[in-house]
Image (cartoon, rainbow, N blue to C red):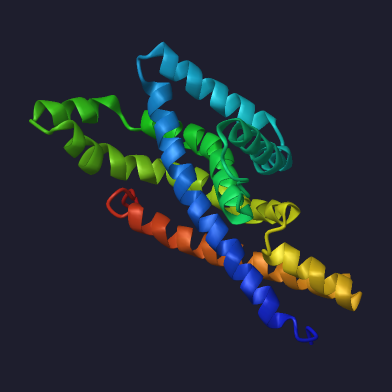
Length: 228
């Protein structure tokens, strides 16, 4: 049915998922750091976080991808010439993961900042008064509640991130879209292969939604109001 390209598409799909998952890890780290910076008392930290979220959310993802891959490679090798380094070829996979993680870190910053603010301050103060350490307050009091508030925003951004991985095809990475384009060009059946790619993306997002729905139910245990 797919003229022998089924395995190629599945390999591309696996690479797409690897990019998405590792980008998610980077985005969560940057998002947490950005949220803490925005909520800190340091004006410098607040300013840096504000510039980061404002600029990243204003510039198209494709532009940032091209800037990091091509512009970054030129900048590094220009510096390398002065220092006597050998030519450095940036790996497309690493560039894709870092760029997507960096982009979505800005969105996660706002999601996590809102989740922090949604936890009543009185609960944190009560925990400190009971002798909890700051780490215990974060792990046992703030963290679980923050995750419950952040989950809708995190799930939405994750779904967008899976689709956004398609932009790595422009830098030569053999992801799902790249494999579909190659197959479509060879067989001259673009509708078939782009349709197959769309179905695979749909499968990823559907399974993700089911997973987040299960996690949401788990986190809601003990918080549901009794039926009147």
